[in-house]
Amino acid sequence: MSSGPSRLRGDYERETTAPAVWLVCALAGVFVIQFSLELASGSAGGGLAEGMALSGEALRQGRWWTPLTFWLPHSTSNLFHVGLVIAGVLLLGRDLLGRLKPRMMLAVFGLGLLAGAVWWTAINWARPTGLIGATAGVYALLVLAARLSPDREFRFLLLFLTPVSFRLRQLVWALFAVEVLAFVLNDLVARPLPFDYAAASHLGGMAAGWIAGRRLAVRGEIGEEETSALPPQEAPPEVSSPRSSAELRAEVDRVLDKISARGLGALTPDERRILDEAKHLLDRR
Image (tube, rainbow, N blue to C red; front, side, top):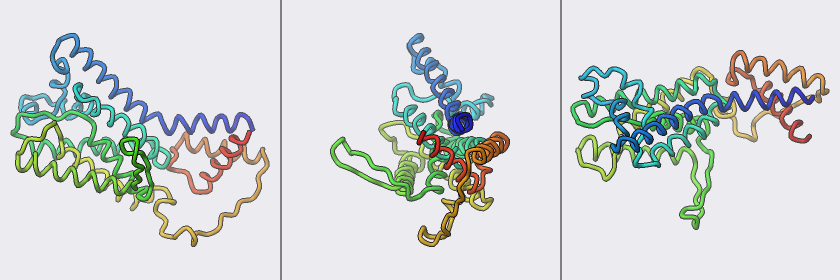
């Protein structure tokens, strides 16, 4: 049983981290290039962000590639911009890839970017400003994660002193309220904020995540545990028969072959229980 669980753990970790890692590598790589060009030229971003940013002026001038590149550069003067985006991609991506096929997670991220770009461009078509950053894609993943696990609770120390806890859906609603307020002040009333903030793009990403969650629920592609209408006490008891090492190894190999061919999202509840049983056995060794 030594090779089976080892292969299980390696394949599972690669399956649940590879897409998020590739996204992070792309974002971090462009940021490093931006920073290097800025140091070499002495100008903000070294001109790279301006050439990749999306704006009405850029589209009018024929820079058709900007809708495909605007999400890669980030502000070099505000490290929280790229830092929060990378953290969001890693944390949310790993969580969602445990329940969805990798191409579905990437599709939701891309749809968030597209919706954010379209809505932001429609609002700011005539304004002399540009859009950069992948925050809209992260917002799409966040809303989808809240759809899958609305009651997931997070705890942290506010200012390292006061314990604070909140649920994922509460976080989404709080961010939605902030984005709507910023959208009204900056985009509709045209009152300048003390920092660059693309609220229209963020709201577009949130809308894309909400629509994706509804579509996945209708198509039955989200986990049974998140969509079940039965309360925990009414769930049918789980009956499992003991398996020998050879039987469990054969079942694990069959499930791994299915993951390689169709992704984690194609697994049935019984197949997920087989993976859990094999992982628990490996952890005890």
